[in-house]
Image (cartoon, rainbow, N blue to C red; front, side, top):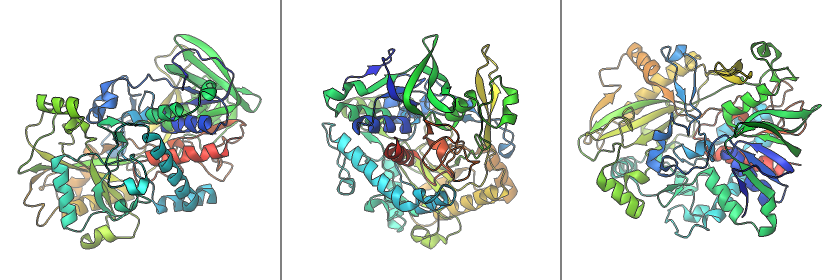
Length: 556
């Protein structure tokens, strides 16, 4: 399909979408392919042409580069006064261009919580139906890729994506340990309709050794349309959106900076903000929407009161539990000559790995013997990698390791973002003060101690003890609760699953209504992770795609 990309597009447009991430690309594809109108997709990033964004194992090397927005937290009291980086993709594809490509659909307990605060539209049944439609859509698109992937889930997905490529030998051995101990997750072979407790290889959004980002899916969708629809889609990258433009209480366009020039682009039907958990509230603040009290710090006229905008920030923290192996091969960076040749010739080997190939879920209060069959809502997730979690990709390792990224997926702590004036700006640009409030709820810390204890119990016994040489981090000598508390505060960091700053809700104080509409403003929607009432207990990409699919159903 012909489309404008990177040049000043001609209008007018029915919809303008701000942000070419998971939600924005999915929405743009649905608007065009369902013939809902014309769309302009805007993004501050550039096309995903770098090897860092295409070679799966390279994604950590994109953090802190021009492909990353490089947000940071304030000093976190709960994390030993550390300020930690918050990676977020700044490229076409958004964070799907720099994430671990894991595809997991949210659990029933997630939608039980959503329905309480956002209404019955967000109960499990309609969300599960939307997930099915998203999977079928991915399947139809990926059939256009010439080489078929063999996946044990083809019969369920009727598709080649999401898929499970080859597993690294260390990961394959770990998976066999779970299987031998009857701890494999029973849900995965039955279609990932919902995750249960237990462990298995993760489904990944990749094909033939390459990442399949949201931007790639959009391209496949556009290529499948007919020539007569070629006028419906335009994309302008390297375009920084300053604010939304209004006519009274209706959004009618956006003000952007592109190639050093400011301009206004109009939208007949409305504007959809999909700029992410931090980018979306920044645009709303810069447009005069938010709590009046917070506008004293910025030179922006207050337009509409939205008291909860920027509140309810949530994130998943991950804690590295690293084990030195008695035998096995190392995964280090940069790759050796053999690994480079294997990837160039066959698109296989360590460079084709998303690193977090294996993992799963468990309830930290469940009995270890029955942990894979527990029906209670889980509170922890493992992201298992064949690396030393703290060293890859910055330090060369000559010793084989296996890391268990212990991830707390049910945090009670909440934080916020608020607008501030950018320190390096002469034109009153709005920046963000980001305070996730990590471990501000005492229950989270006690949960972490229980999660560490349960991880250690799961890795004891035959099989594991024959293979794991020692616990390098936190180390077997760290057993006292006070010492482990210090370890959590010193080493826990984000796994970059931020959400909630523009959350859906049924009360007038919530930033959005149940159908993603910004309260008090016509023709303005928000759809991305910021709209989640509570953060789902898994990797959020699949859920964000489902949310975008549902908004497409509701657009006028």
